[in-house]
Length: 610
Image 1 (cartoon, rainbow, N blue to C red):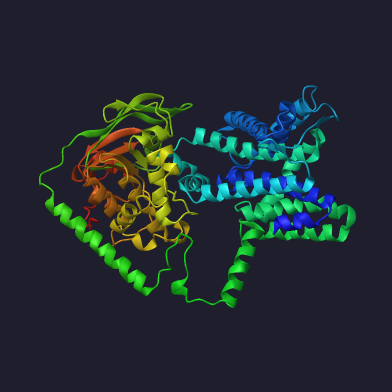
Image 2: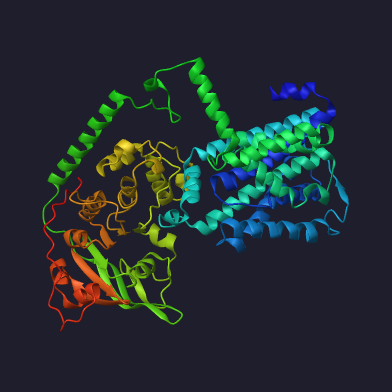
């Protein structure tokens, strides 16, 4: 239909459609970077200018020259990302804006580039030796490039790489503790996004025939980002609508001011709607289409096809799922019955050796020394401000110690970054929920599998390992939520996405550091505690930071007590409960003044998840 419309309009309108395609392709680069990756850039139109400049200077009006222009823009994008790796949000946006201003003043207006108010002549692309001479044919080619870029993004979003992008947007810390090297992943993301914008700039140069610095002013990136976000920065449709609106804005301002005012009103209402739906106007159009489709062609809810090809879950489907889950549990119990008896081999999987952490003149951790044994749950407790979280961060790589060592599997991992420790088996959870809320419960586990598999896993078919993942979800008791978004399930249930399935996909003997919140009330034991006990039974070392003494005394095999950064007691729950130093640390009295001891904790029966 687009091709027919291009053939029917005038030459001026054809050129405007080409401009809209350019804007839409630049917005597609924002769909990748901002919509999927969660990073804000105010330099996308500058990257398009880099692509146009490279295309003009290379003087290779063919597909090779266009590809080289995109690669040069991608390289510039990588160089921009390197110095701002640790910045996010507003500071990242300001950094990219500063880069755009610098490029405009010092590069684009230099003698070797466009020069001040100067232009460079360009030729249109030739394909297989055939030059695309007519305006209509060239705009068709641009529309084809937009369609191919959009299909590429849709393919990427529905695969492993798309899941990882969404997960990184939802929780960078969670991705890092799963083993993703966030630094180079972000560099690659910026580079690919800049390359897409550079390709749009090269095509625009061929469309215009001449390009100059005035075509790529830095503040245009603000308009591109604004319209992309308002119309839908998470979808290809939003990029198409935003590119069309950005093209129409100056046209209507000069010819039909009343329509321009209407467009500004749409932008204003769109910005207000973003408070209720961050996916933009395009998402409201999708909802309207689904509503109209349901009214025109009503279908029974149980027969509606899902986006992933499965039928919606009706009563019979839920019954089959429950039966399958029962079969998984029975099979797991049978496997356990066949295993030889005897105690698991006890070995220090994780060792903390004389770790000291100082912040200025404050010593947060002072010569802490303890270990976590394979197949045991080790508790790390202490009053508020004792240094538990700091010690925890040292173990998982989020905090560099002032002195001391952390050993894992008899290897010194003190200087290893977070992702490298995770790749070798040290995982963790957080006090606040770090599940990937925009993904389904099943995809949360898939992300862990994708990251653990490395880059080769990112191009594998999406359905690989689905049976294993579903069995793992059923095993920890959340199989019924597999197709629900993680941010739509109860918080306590979502907690099981962290210590259970993610660790279950790692090699046996890995160390899962857990810090569950006070989200479950007695007399019912916490599901996270049952999950931790089940994992420990498989040879995983569990280090638990917890304030709930009933839970600690019930599930931990060994306990270490921190007070003012020092280990003041270590031993079994019974020894820790009766230790006078622990009583003083928690209750704050002198031993000579009082003889009260911590109340004995009643036995708590924990149901170990099979």
